[in-house]
Image (tube, rainbow, N blue to C red):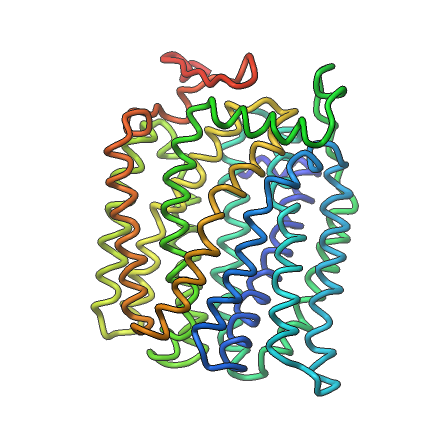
Length: 418
């Protein structure tokens, strides 16, 4: 796995993502806690979650642009713009004009720009590493995300309590500047585009991405993701209030760090699970997640709470990496950006609805009840996989072959020979 660091472009992309993901963690904790501290209401944190996650639902519309634009330039300019936006919050606090409405304006704008970063970075990977290294590269990339969350979510929770949320916004702007410097030196070979790609426009390419997904086995994975994200969105919106009931901002940071730790462990061990049929892996993994999540809500110890939340997300980390490898092996390079964007957009479309509903429910029924609903969501995923034959019998990521024609997904019983 670590031989990938001999590749200079992989190093730049890896460390650029590491820095920007660290900044995202600082920003996410600071922004949600700032909204809650300014209002004291889960309704407003639900609104914040809806606005932020709603931008993720627009990711499909950036897909054709990612496939056409320079990936390096896309990464550089989106980081620069996010850094400038984040600086408006500490500036407003310095001028004594900070309000929840400013924070609710900045959050979705930063999130919208971030929708270019994920598909651009992921689409760059198959162009700079060999196909046999994709699972390892994806695992390392997930480590940059989850590892940064593990460290900086916990640190952010402590820093919010010590120096305040607005100071974290100031520190966060520095991370985006560092990311710009790293991405500026990145060299990504252009994707091979056929004559049909060159002659089509933006909307034709967008429709092509949607059409491909609808006719692929990947659509069943998308269905499970939509179900999970909607229910988990309800829990995410009340997590600050839930943590406040258990302690303070430090508990919020520790919970987010625990979730990140579980996802990180899952990402690191994911290569060991890539030969297991994806349907079987999903059923067993999400059953473990449901048990751990619901058990976490029954314990009094903060340490046990964090550990159980971490355990609940180990299967999630494994599933995310294996699913990404499956997608990258199936989808042609020239379409990967838009297909990833469509998947990202559709899979998260339910999250803002869930976040808004969770915020309302949190004020009415309390945050603990809403957290139970999130745990039950994992059981719904298990039921969904069992009830959908195409998903239940889906092969392993290593048992699929690359696409030969758009809109059709193929599996091979001998694919492991590579």
